[in-house]
Image (cartoon, rainbow, N blue to C red):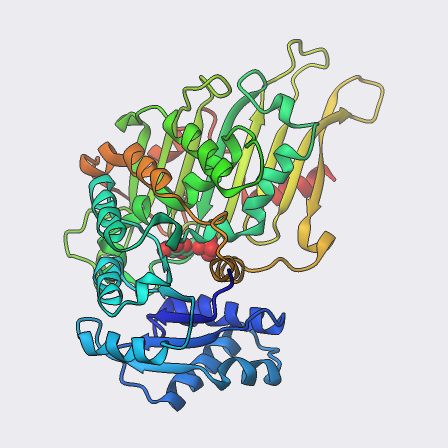
Length: 462
Ligand code: BG6
């Protein structure tokens, strides 16, 4: 059933400003936003100031806005001002949305408020008929996630909870499934018999951008590895689901997550960029990692023995989200030494796929040269939809496909449990480097080039 109202907690916050309002604009532009929007926030803003801020936030992301769409979006938007600790806030909200049959309540706020706000919503009767969308991180380890789930489940069944991981809203990430399961060419070789390693890099050239207070209590493992990177890994390695229904997908994800072998602490490198300790909101002696790299194995029939390398960090040389699947060498080197085949998925900017192959080098000798087959999806299909646009739409339609199920969330915490509880100390690294040297040494022969370095090589091949 379609929702008829959208209530945004944290409506004056960063996420709303950067992602949610621009996404709502896109939905309005497509004429897909037939809900009334309410913001809830503790900032004492007037309705006018709220709307002005919404407009500014959208214009900052979309310089070519259509004024008519903007007017339609903000026209009947309403801000409810109140503290989250004050029951009167929820009474006012209940009154404001009493005519609406199916509100979606989006909690774009710090995770420590999830249970508290849901309880307050239940007290005024809203949860009986609402869907509640919670942002990540869901908990900060296995136990706290379990506890948060138990608290929410007292108030809401699983069907009414939508846990966000915005990577599940990215078209490029979803394309991993299509690439694998719609192309007969690849699926037969997508296993330990042909794949020699998998590398996933989520690198960001920026730092913590004024989010010191939040980030210092979280770190790279909790902020993005437990969720975004493990989702990418799951899409790459899961078995084909029996259909594209939400439950079938989730069932396969659980299977692959539960096959991940306990990670050896010596296969993990935690780093902290130089200067992190001077950031506002960061504890003077903080051991929070802004970089993490690790090697893991999936102990199942398909992937046994294939090393899988993950790395993510802030203040790295560039912002890229890429996966490199490296294939084994042919059984006999008939043409002398040649490079292995690789499939490189670009999941961030300029998303697409590059497949490196060996071709005969021109000339008399029978030797090989690397060539690439490349596709860039935006060039091919035009612009992609943004993840928040897709997730907001799905929440309003009641489609769980792009949200995480609690057992998967718990499994992903479990995989990282020991590392989070007993971490090695962080090693500092220079800004704009690829993290501590120890991270380079994790991968025999080094990490495959990604980003501009890989593009340069590709251009050389062309
Ligand atoms: C968020 C993290 O979930 O994802 C941020 O909290 C990170 O630290 C962001 O920068 C990355 O998202 P994207 O879509 O830009 O890759």
